[in-house]
Amino acid sequence: MLFFLLVGMFIVDADLAMQKKTEVKILLELSNHHATFAVDPVLKTEGVIDLLEEEALERFDDRMHENGGYRREQAMFFPQADSVTTDPIPFSRYYVDFRSWRNDHQLRLQYNGKTLVTERATKGPARPGGGMLQITVVTERGEELQLAPKTMVGPSHVVVAYIDERPFLPMLPSHSFPVVSVEELKD
Image (cartoon, rainbow, N blue to C red):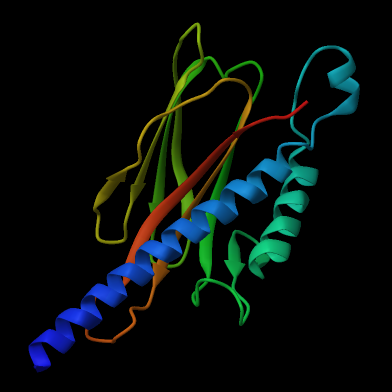
């Protein structure tokens, strides 16, 4: 009986982890979509769509707070009592501008247990339909997590977050996974 109870708790814990991943992904997508409306109005009149990064981050913060109850301090989002996660979420941003969105980009990020930083950003060859974005997150244990490649269709704002949550039961492993949002700038 105890065995079945333990298996049931493990299933509940895994289900909670998947729900958190889905909720944070949706939250990042909504926040990033709102951020990508922060385009430079002067350049836009000249036919150039370029992101005002400071305004974009403010818009991103507003949506993270409104939709998820998170507040930002530097490169970390801290949950409130009603947030989907209980532990802070480190994140990293990368902007692919109008001059290089047709090029392939490889991002390598490092998670050290507290922060998520871009270790390397490499620009590759151009593709007529838009570059491929490949993101690799290296965990504190040295494990390399490769996210599914994304094709860019215009200048893009990329946000990568790393969720590292305590489990439902202390005897189970933590929930650790990266989440990415890639949004084209809106004109």
